[in-house]
Length: 140
Length: 282
Image (cartoon, rainbow over all chains, first blue to last red; front, side, top):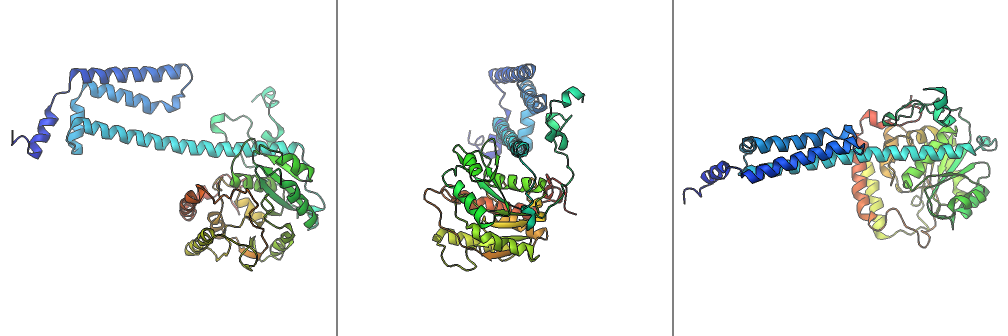
């Protein structure tokens, strides 16, 4: 037991633990539900196709890793993680952080476009009732 | 696009080349530059200034009767637009509040497409004295400068600033110089006169919607525009006035300004001229 608690042995022990069938079933189910929700939103026109590739890829990745759990272990070993779940957790958080950043970029772009359109609307409205610069104004 | 569907679009949209474009690829094509007159416009961004804007417009018209006055109502919920029009100003109304910088930029865009040669910007709260406008314009007309900044501190008599704001002003002034900008005693002054080449540059996408300050001055300087300061008198902030550098924004402002300065210094050329109504300066 003492030898088991030494660093590398403990890591190997934890990494070798089989994934519980229930955990894998939940992963598979969650991935499938998520994918069907994405497809339903697209079908109803509430989510544009342009924004779906990441979500579809995420759902498929969860389902693939549920079936092929060794893939998670491979990733964990490559990253130097202690457990497969911590590697999965880290990658999920990283994915979400970059996704949020992507949306922040998109929001900034939309805010800039809304500003330009609102200004354009205001200027066009003013133009309808406006006259050219006064001749007095040209006196300077 | 069929003639039927074209009939649904306003003439302005045709002029801007928006017809026939999908919303996802909405791009305002460059219209031809209008004939430039020698006229001057005073642009006043205003947000919920119904109580004061009428008096400000009247004072401007008395001080400089030969210039046009346009008030950009930034989505006010009070009678700002009506009071401004009653006092004799033209009014451009944002459909909703876009921010002080965006309201200023609407003024620049208005002046750009109407062919004005010069633009004077002043605040709607009555802090800036319209009697100083001719002196600001004189600096442009003499050809000495492209931007004349009305400064409270060239002749510092009269205006009192809190210690915190005074420290911030010095810091910004020094930062501007450190980044290669000119020495400006009052870098946060919103009382400015701009020549056409200068306000055309401000029509671009880079112009901030919230607080345009030393970042945009540095931008103009780096574009070869000549900046000069003119001593002006400024009244203290009126009671109930909400400064754009006060409250929670006082914390956000220095951070935002550092980032905006970094952006100005590192701005790639395409971003520099993105959104300019008549393309990059020749």
